Image 1 (cartoon, rainbow, N blue to C red):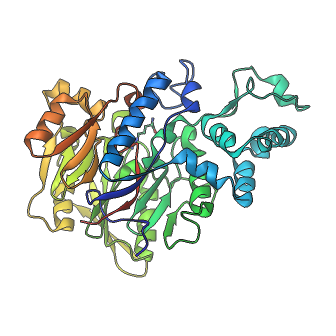
Image 2 (tube, rainbow, N blue to C red):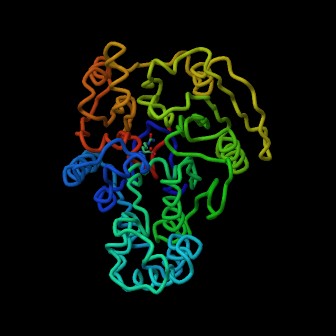
Image 3 (cartoon, rainbow, N blue to C red):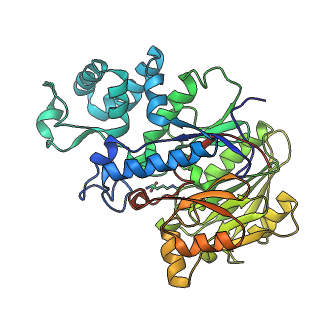
Length: 406
Ligand SMILES: NC(=O)NCCC[C@H](N)C(=O)O
């Protein structure tokens, strides 16, 4: 079996992709952080240090950490990949014929390291050192962006997600994140770690308009036993879930997809902000989504890519059935209702499981972490004062590409 395989949420994690926040956070200001889907500006150095502690915690657990910046810079070494990225990320319809040409000429003069920094972190008109004869340069303010920064690359979970023997290259819901997917498309197509390897691309391989079929990886939980749990959240749509399910079934990678209709608001932007899998039978869940009237469906593989859709009575029962467990062990967010709401907002439920019963989570969520501890779950704490301002925790900040099954 290919090593590019994610068999579950809780089996031994072996290899993961992270993105150490860098240039894009320098471009995050009080005037743009909302459009860029952050809740504040960050102390950039401190955010980097917090991220280093996250990466080191993973390495200490024997997990190999790949960094997105390095993968992108190495992909740019491949001439075809570089040409494709420059054409798609710095396109003529985005910047105009003349200006796109001038910006690409400048970018080609840089090292691939510097180019990766700019593609990920953005380029403002102040940073562009050349004179262009286009109207664009004359018509923009110095702090406008030629290439928008992509600070949400920090959340590698969402842009692409591995499910059993393949990866979904996700059509992202928010304009601020849509260009991220092209970086992953190039990496999986051309980087020597992935090019020519035996894996499936379920969805989103092409750079095109996927219309309403949106999927973000924070909504996709590989719960094991041939099942996948997907949240239809602020971001992932039923059309996206159906497209993913069809592809999973056509490739014989899953027996069943359980889809949950989540509330559509920011604190619940992805399934993993309210629910994660911590041990074979144990989930962390925010109590407000444990309502029996939350709609859920089972999409069942009928063979040849055919999908049977059945309404489920209660999503937790559907999970028990899929995992062949008599009863799930649910740990809810800690503290009273106020504390639970605050800790959920600060990603107390968004933990990254390293192996069954061992998770990485933000140290500040004291009430929830205490509950995990009492339930026999080991929490490896990481700081998140700065990182948490992007509204994502350890699971959001990681894209497993190799993990054992149940
Ligand atoms: N899986 C996740 O919940 N990821 C967190 C994404 C946070 C990011 N600022 C966003 O709004 O997309």
